[in-house]
Amino acid sequence: MPFIAIRGASLLADEVELQAHLASLLRLENVGLLLGAGASVAAGGFTMIALWNHFVAACPHDAEWLVEHGFIAREAVVAQDRITPNIERLIDSLEIALSDWTRKAGLIDEDELVGLAPDEQEELQNLADLKTSRAALYRTVVSAALLQEAWWISPGGVESDETRLASQRTILQKLVSARQPGQSSPWIFTTNYDLAIEWAAESIDLQVSNGFLGVHARRFSPQSFDLGFRNTQARGEARFGVYNIYLAKLHGSLTWREEGGQVFEIPASLAHQRITEFMAEREGAELGLMVMPRAAKYMDTVGYVLGELFRRFAEYMNKPQTCLILCGYGFGDEHINRLIRSALLNPTLQLVIYASGFTGDPMNLALPPTLRKLLSLKNPRVTVVGGGAASAYVDSLARHLPDPLIYDEDLRKLEKALRATDAPAEEA
Image 1 (cartoon, rainbow, N blue to C red):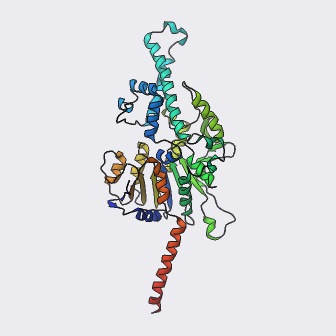
Image 2 (cartoon, rainbow, N blue to C red; image 1 turned 60 degrees about the horizontal axis):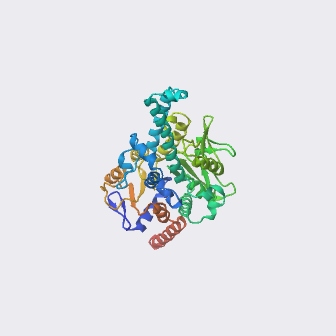
Image 3 (cartoon, rainbow, N blue to C red; image 1 turned 90 degrees about the vertical axis):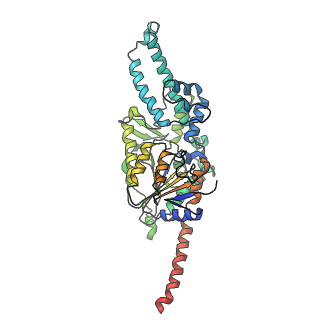
């Protein structure tokens, strides 16, 4: 589709103008990304729409059961004009129902199945079906976050694949290289459970500060977000170079495990073994890894970890001279949307939003309500870039971000030209 981008109420002429705008934003004190499911499509992930369509096609009986028991609307499973539900909210509802139905089933004496009343038999059957449907939905979510099987099995699998994570590598390198002496490292916030960012950073020898500390027992320690890296051998401005990124996985990760009231990060190879076992089960299996917020545990350990990450996200957007670039995020999480809307009260916050559905019409009803609201503000601090297929989200961002070395060279040439212009006037 043709290039389309709007800043406030003004259309940007072309990609060159957008690139110049991004170059100025990368000079701000704080630079970060918010990545959604669309940012991992090129690496093998699914968008939320594709994920739901895959679930309905692969598990039609489970999808129908969810409709019959009121967890989703009939429109979510019809072939034409299918409406994708909020999957995390759906799992949240299933967790609450599981807790409630398990309590009720505990009052039934299963040793006397022959003498059970029909309603008691129905309750036990519903509980079994609930566990089966929930596990099927979990397996679909996990399969979407696996990306490429070879990357889990072999540490060198990611480095040997030069194409699928090329855009992620380019983005990380450009963000880090654009940091000026004394400026903080870039932040990457993501709602994805996959390891795309970790693998991309590791393949270019970039340190990842993700809130976990330790070597063999990596425990969640939020104070690690306040630490940085420096080169002790560097001299001059190089001493203030950036050697890491901060990564906050707002909805959890496939490699997180809760144990003994704490959350640990386990190696990808070990996580893959447990994921493989989980994917092979057909009944109400438990993954054992925390991959998303769950209402039944929110006030426990999981709530603390995710709450800390969201606090960091809100804190980041309220800092002075801050830029946040949204890529592959479909505005499907209202708790994140609220934080973004309230953060606009920060007069120095700049937002850049890559939205595939944006074609130039700010009032297009097909756009998410939050995006329409942001467009209606006509705020010059909000830039929206239209895109094509979901797989082009991250590719477009990688192409549009300016190369810092070229940008700096252009500035030096401009400065030299201005000095040459001013020299005769000073002599006169």
